[in-house]
Image (cartoon, rainbow, N blue to C red):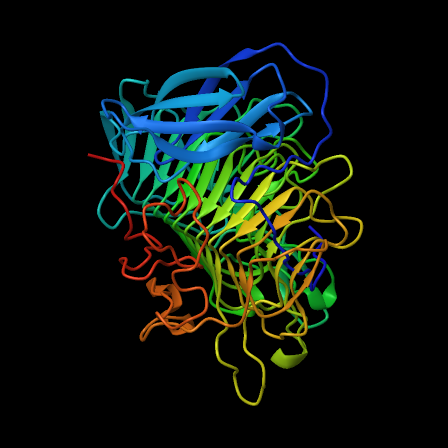
Length: 557
């Protein structure tokens, strides 16, 4: 999707985080609350019947059996449909929680259990090496999954003779441990109508079709050919409740063009198109070896002009290492309904996380780390336009959903000689031009360190309903009067061994003497575990952030 550069971040928000970007609508009939869980998050929905105003719906939670309630960020009230929506994050897996929702004099409670990390295996099918497509057709059930397990050293290499390497046409299945090479179009594909699928610990490479050769002699691939994918276009049944975890997806057969020759077009690493929600994409590693084999979008999908989009409602993307895309590192665009994107390391992409638009909302971007940005390949680094960490526009027909941008860190790698400027983002949180302004967006506690201080750390492109404040930034703020009233103008100072040199090693703590150290505004459920929260993604004194395949626990026995 098209990217507009140099959008600036300006964020001013009350501690309650409860602006409403929509006019009041007629009172609607109350409805019972509901919850949709993943491993570490729960999305909540409640129509209280009366508009609670800018405060939204107050929210408390506790694990079952606890006495004390914990405060969470209030649910955003969407007056378009009279519904309070929002998420509780950073929960323990396999745990039952109670939630209490309050709007004025009304109150309601419900319980929901997060997913267990362990999936019960009812049957294991061992698979050796083969040169034809592996068709996964044996379904399990809610009480027991069918595990398709690669034999030690097994390789599925279809040598460009088969459309896909692994074709998943079953429910309640786990596909684990395969090396998948040489597919004509897609390494692994999930067929329409399938659900409850786990794709884990696979290595996917060498997929994709030839599209054209550009003027620089690059062989370009077909758009949407992907290492791991599902496609649900034209009203076919949705694919949903998919877990894609701890996979290596790398080296497509052909790449995408850079922005020098127009909007990038080419392969993706992980994608889903117009599919269902309640998906988790975590702890994957996405990269490519050279600029001629970079992706269009590394992890993404569509459609953007949609109330679905990618990754679907009630979905999480976290803990991934995302590299080498000529467009978006993570493209989480379209509906954005209780979508959570956090704890990812993103490097050598044109944008970090794109959320243009958020049609329904809310979408949460928090504790992501963005290193290098590159948009143009045919000019020296100092003449590149770069791009933005958070591409955050809205569209006339699809937009105005709530967006939260919290505790993210923008790094600035040292210049490469003979260049003078660092290598990181050109902008922080930005709209996508005057036709796609940033609206209904809250920013807090971000480090918006951009490569040129006279450019923009925040630019809403004339959008309304925003609340920008308590960020550390070195660029300009182009927004409403009073934005970043409590923000800090400056640049971060990292503790020894921390900063951009850590790469994906997870160390980005501020030094105690740095601007933003210990001065972040408290946000219920996001940083209230710390006595003195820091700005940025990594809290001083905590363990290294973890990205990629070594993180977390296995879903299998």
